[in-house]
Length: 203
Length: 47
Image 1: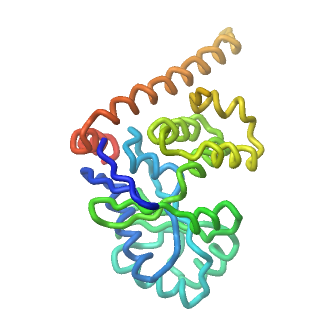
Image 2 (image 1 turned 45 degrees about the vertical axis):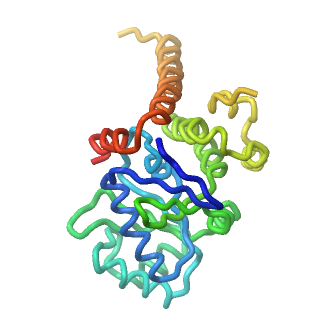
């Protein structure tokens, strides 16, 4: 695997799959609307080569006001449809402002889709603030910090999530800030011994 | 039908541990494999 590491950036060139294409398309809209955001959770593992698929891609954005969301909605609907509601006011008021995600898929499709919600907790706010930029085939894609990615997947705790956490941990083992990861595991009130066992973290 | 739940649980746990070991092997393979090659294979799974 050829990866180039810079200051807050990772450059990756690969044959794009349908999730990569969808993520890049969504990212372009967010960037055009100048919205701070990160891609996170399972897609980050897939981006870096995990051998599994997913029906959705998770994105968290900074909280928007009604005008900012309307601008994003209009931009997204050039290529996509919201598969939760046709009404942008409902999407904003009944979903996003109530900490509930909405989903966008390519026109006339249902999966894969992008699951988007506003950042509402400290972990999500920090992920946006301290994001990494993956330059994927020349285009920027903002992702959550890798330490947070690993710790949060452990917190979610399903077998699939733990496998994703181990994948990122093993792939970036010589790049991760171990103190930061240990701190996040403690913040999430996870058992450090069990977490290290799941990660195959030999100390 | 008599099902030994403890035996099933042991198999489930063993399968999970085998999957974690597979991830380690897969990551080692990824690290030594050119992007063009692994991403082409990944696309067959992801679409």
